[in-house]
Length: 403
Image 1 (cartoon, rainbow, N blue to C red):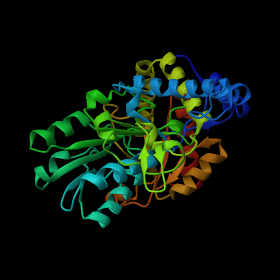
Image 2 (image 1 turned 45 degrees about the vertical axis):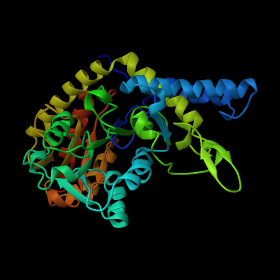
Image 3 (image 1 turned 180 degrees about the vertical axis):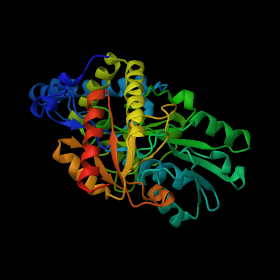
Image 4 (image 1 turned 30 degrees about the horizontal axis):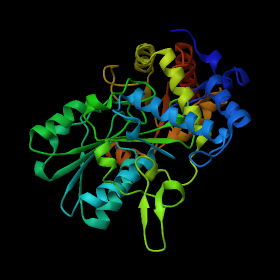
């Protein structure tokens, strides 16, 4: 695949930048930036409310993106796509709008030790409110999920709430196998997937996963910030309560009562991030034009190269699978006894942008027996030269701290 950095203005502004913080947020292509700019210049109006031409055009543009998203993840209908503010809000919508309504004391929600806080805290709160039980699937020694270690009554497992890809380890979880295992053992389980870390890198098919819910964010897949997506099966959405109420998510309001709008509008209170949704649509166009299979193939090559380089460096510990099979290009590591923040600071001096800390995965950090890591994460515009720069920077860290 050709070098795509030319499509991303930030690399022209900072030609020395080695951007390896893609798990936190991705850079934006010129096409996405222009789409947002063009919307403001030529189409800016509120949606779903005006009968004038500008509002109708803006509404059509917004709703067209809903269709693009549905097609991108192979949903049955755009009615199954809800625009939120983030993956976090999408998961909270499921916890509040569905789980709080249909789960009861003693029901089990299965999570994993590698979950992001956004897919832990809503369930902890629900546990405290209604008495559900949480079970965390443990890790194997090679940083995979040991999903057959579930101990309990399968019939009480009502929800699997799992990340598809770990934002720390890079592990791709075998969702189909996990779901089949629980259902074959007598669970009528519903499935919620956090696909925020996988949808930028892998082809996603919600039907293949047989999931009931999936949550992700625009900003990790080249789109603008402040836009999240919740996919949910139509029949489930029709039973759910909204997370936020007010504004145009209504059918009719009187002094005595309210009726809600049809799905998915009943879950989209207030004015949405219209320009952000437009940008997400253009980001999807860019990904599809590049080709998700081509992206996956290219990133696997860079990942394999990076794993070889990491293996050649002494006094470095990599947290995550050591082979490229069922993993993406996320590399969490420790350099000897150097603090993660110190490693990131030294790398920054060489214009290498990485993340340091617990990565909103403190449960995982506790399981690993550490307080944090330095994390480098690649995307479609990264190159083997970026990996070389990272490894050279790590050698500078070792020299600086005499490791």
